[in-house]
Amino acid sequence: MKTAGWSTRRVAGQVDRSECAVRNCWEQWTREGAHARKTGSGATRKTTRRDDRRIVRQALVDPTVTRSTIRADVSVAIVPQTISRHLPEANLKSKRPFRALPLTPKHRQLRLQWCQARSMWNVTDWQKVVFSDKSRFVLGTDDNRVRVWRHPAYDSRSTLIVMRGTLTGQRYVDDILRPHVGPFLNGLPGAIFQQYNARPHTARVSQNFLRHFQTLPWPARSLNLSPV
Image (cartoon, rainbow, N blue to C red; front, top):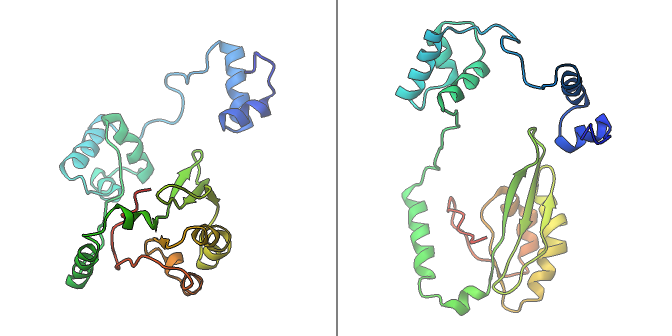
């Protein structure tokens, strides 16, 4: 891109890097004919090969071990981020543990009753349901996240709605329910609106708006069963 006459700013915007990083890379290329990092450059590695083996061994023996526990066992003055960088060298990755929501007997009973009440629904019954769902997309390496929201029916669907920032109950009403969901449901006689129990959905302001429409009941702590 630089050889094609692009400016540093234009290249930085295209590759999503800072102008300083692009400038340094270009200067190294024009000076040395390469942009790779030199062997031995950078800070001296603080862990020995033995330390690295202990880090990897702990991660393999106990997949739930934390970086802080590994750091204390290695007894080397390193930050947790250093451990995260060492694990990929052994084809390992650090992940957040999955925690399932605890279900009481009441939760299970309500789930079962919900399924039994609709076990005999046919295609015509389900065609009346307008499902809704949202998804989050990360644009770039920072936390530049956007959320998209849509509600499809059997033979139609709404426009794709892009949401930035935190979705509160009031924003849910002002930006989604009133301008999009309400008109969409009014155009489908007998429509049943489905949404799961996210806090913006169960907020009083949202429930007040939806009282004019038929909604599909959703038991507490139920799975997101939307086919979207």
